[in-house]
Length: 331
Image (spheres, one colour):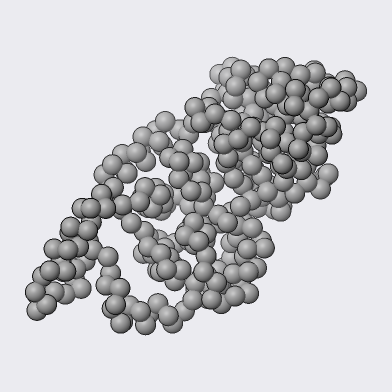
């Protein structure tokens, strides 16, 4: 997927460029900066000495030396005071300047740390939001694979309120699988004469797998066909759709070119989010790919939470999914 949050050591990322959260001297320091200089070897420091430092909010590029990455993009994040001294604008500039350098040097893959969120004190949830917002805006206009690399899960944090709201929504809606099965068995053991689809729905059981009408409705249009007609219906271009879905262009081409293509569940949901479908419409699209949303699956409940709130920002949804150790949306 074009933007992915991963838990890793950024010095181990085999990408075209990694971004270093540097200080203005560019001569190394603690945290991510020190780790990158240590892994890259003395050649990196020697080149940095020729650059004359770097101002806060700006970025400069060097070779990667002993790192798996070809380049290191050094950017200087702001020291957080109270959020009223231009910190947000400076942090946004760090990401924009770094992405511009990556594009200029024809990088296809770039890995960022969460800039300024360590000793510089930028609140982690706000730092993450700045990173996601700037990177996602860039990706709407450019083709690049970007990673936000989190070294330690404890260092990763979404908004406390959002986390609590989602946690409460999960608690309210999560249904143990055994409870589902017992409810279903009660329904299935009802006398045939009293059994109706309406009564079945009241019991919250799954649709009957062998219902002929349902099967006929599902085979009249494939997932690919439904996706393409929904794109037209929404007045979107193909590029707008797959970029908003955090889907790689090559995968979208495969789906467009194969009427019988069967996507993964996260990919199917990503397109539903991109198209801003309602819960019912999302369920219809998932059925075309052979899936359904379930209250016995936390991933599904989180997706339902965002759709019910009318929040279709796939990058914010992925932040939450990552925080709850769930699969991310996209390819």
